[in-house]
Image 1 (cartoon, helix red, strand yellow):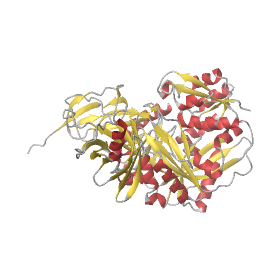
Image 2 (cartoon, rainbow, N blue to C red; image 1 turned 135 degrees about the horizontal axis):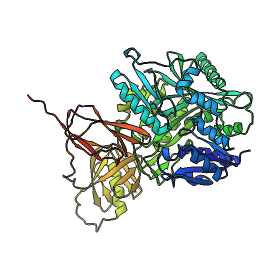
Image 3 (cartoon, rainbow, N blue to C red; image 1 turned 60 degrees about the vertical axis):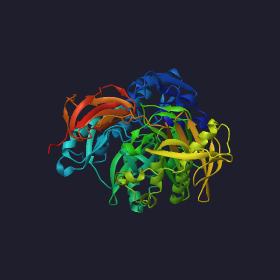
Image 4 (cartoon, rainbow, N blue to C red; image 1 turned 120 degrees about the vertical axis):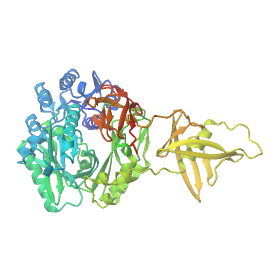
Amino acid sequence: MISTLLVANRGEIACRIFRTCGELGIRTVAVHSDADDTALHARVADTAVRLPGATPAETYLRGDLIVKAALAAGADAVHPGYGFLSENPAFARAVIDAGLVWIGPPPEAIGAMASKTRAKELMGIAPLGEVTEADLPVLVKAAAGGGGRGMRIVRRLADLPDALEGARAEAASAFGDGEVFTEPYLERGRHVEVQILADTHGTVWTLGTRDCSLQRRHQKVIEEAPAPGLSAGLQEELRTLAVRAARAVSYVGAGTVEFLVADGRAHFLEMNTRLQVEHPVTEAVFCVDLVAEQIRVAEGHPLASEPPRARGHAVEVRLYAEDPARDWAPQTGTLHRLAVPAGVRLDTGYTDGDTIGVHYDPMLAKVVAHAPTRAEAVRRLAGALERAALHGPVTNRDLLLNSLRHPEFTAARMDTGFYDRHLAALTAPAPDPLAPLAAALADVHGRSRFGGWRNVPSQPQTRRYEMAGEEHEVHYRHTRQGPTADGVRVVHADAGLVVLEADGVQRRFEVARYGSDRVYVNSTALTVLPRFPDPAAQLAPGSLLAPMPGTVVRVADGLTEGATVRAGQPLIWLEAMKMQHQISAPVTGTLTALHATTGRQVEPGTLLAVVHELQETP
């Protein structure tokens, strides 16, 4: 029996595994980097061991340090979670060789399936050789790992070398393995997967299907179980192929077999030899704890001859600290508040007041709803997201909410190209026009700087806010009856709650303020602007600013001040939260300033370069 378990991971998945361990009476050990010194997973574990350093390569990808941590803390088992070393056969062998129980499949099975190229060969799928025009579009893909890292769509042969180089660098940073390959890219397929669970006694369960078609940068955003709209024949084919993959490598434990479904056919993609991020939807539908089952299997217990029966439908969204309207730029800063209504499941690695840094994946939490039908589950999840309190860095919450209510999604007609088609509409700002007024009235009450009341009309007061990228100016007056605003009746106003009546309809606005310039009105974020804008706050035309915090990992070869660059030419590469972001020349012109150097840490808005546009001669 396992008594003490170390989780070789961080954040949400570590906290989720610790929760099950607590229910089973198993003591827990966390590992943490210096950047995660006060992270939630390090705080909730019974014991925490420091891994010196901040980057994944220094810490969570150091299998030798993690094994030493397990032995030092008295653990007798290691769970890898997902990502990092979860699909590294050498790490699994090191754990076993150290006399520890490995909560996962045998190293040989990981080795056979962890490389997507070898997995395809095992399933009898020939790899794509030298890419020609006839093969386009193709997908460049990391052979190891997952999560959308190390993946690039290539539609022109001229773009292939840069795509290969970028994918290799991203894969090496995220997984410690820079091997990549190419495969045909299907434009309008659905991403469907099968959850498997196998024991050491020859039993293999298939726990239904999941649809994970809504993806950004090839990383899943919304997942559901079961995958809707699949014929009985296709479901049986998926189950058969999944069992075949598991038995081909004598699989043990939890795993996922992934497919692209197009034109009613299933195309094998890969087998993930680990727990998936989206496993909670399967747990909800089958009323099973997959982590508990992983532990029982690792202890040698047999599975029942048949899996539990499915019931209802579950949908999961991934909340990210990122701005979908700005090329999914990751965001950092203090998470002041994260709260969702009761009735849904929240898996997170953050609590109020935690800091979101630059070194790791920007996922804040997963929110999961389960109901008897798909429509009810979607409605419940959308309602919870709408009422959630998310105060801090910009998130993808509005995108998720709009996605759940989009006709293609509600009708289950989505595919992997959903965001390519609809991103602009889904991210179009729709700010609440009364939010700035509510913020101003709450601010007035909170400051209590009214002075003496007079029997003469007061001059209108003004407040300026930035909301959804636009400036908003509000006006109100002080009277003996309290503040008033044209066309709106102020029913109640204090520092935390404002009730306004417009056109006979009363609405409540909960207001929270952080620092001197950030205000949240319900779910709307506002920035307090000075009464008079600073005319000196100007940048030269053609300035390239860092869109997110990160590290400059590459500057285009030979790029110097005075060089001529063409519009769209890649100039600078930033790495933030384990993904690379390319910054290109906005116009054809001359590079008049270059402040980016390899290795430089930058904050959002840092000036990286200036391109002076060339004017065409008449």
